[in-house]
Amino acid sequence: ARCIGRNQERTLAIIKPDAIRNLGDIVSTIYENGFTIARMRMIKLSQNEIMYFYGEHKAKDFFPRLVEFMISGPIVAIELVGSDAINRWRSIIGPTDSQKAKEQGSHLLRARFGTDGTRNALHGSDSATSAQREISFFFGSKYGTNTACYNDTTCC
Ligand code: RTP
Ligand code: MG
Figure (spheres, rainbow, N blue to C red):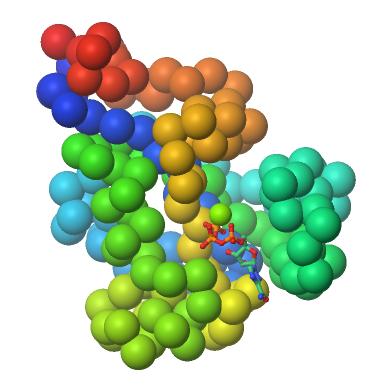
């Protein structure tokens, strides 16, 4: 595998069912922001799989709404690699509520493609621990196909 450089971090992005038609624009934005796509997979998850993936939210009032939304169609899981990828991807998508995102800036991906607090077009891992868990959930291993390293301590 080719080494992609130092200070690289991985995160898991998801294009949610409401944004699948905008896959092309979203992939363009990913590359415009200097990320590499290590792996990408389109999949329709079962109710049980979504409940497991979002298990940390199972007691929240919005959980049934979230599960119903996420099983409403296929999603695309993307393993992103880049500098400060976790925080940078979350800042590119914007706040959870798409209406708040629209107030903060029309360039934010949730402003462009989301509708409200649940139908918000995109996901981004919230920590390195979450990123590892979520990448493994979709891809089975933390290592991508076009990279030789996981982070700056093991790379190059
Ligand atoms: P995500 O995990 O999808 O990247 O989003 P997030 O960190 O910004 O938000 P989180 O609190 O983890 O919530 C997970 C997803 O649940 C749905 N949600 N609906 N009040 C609501 O209707 C509500 N709150 C959260 C959203 O789809 C959110 O992304
Ligand atoms: Mg979250």
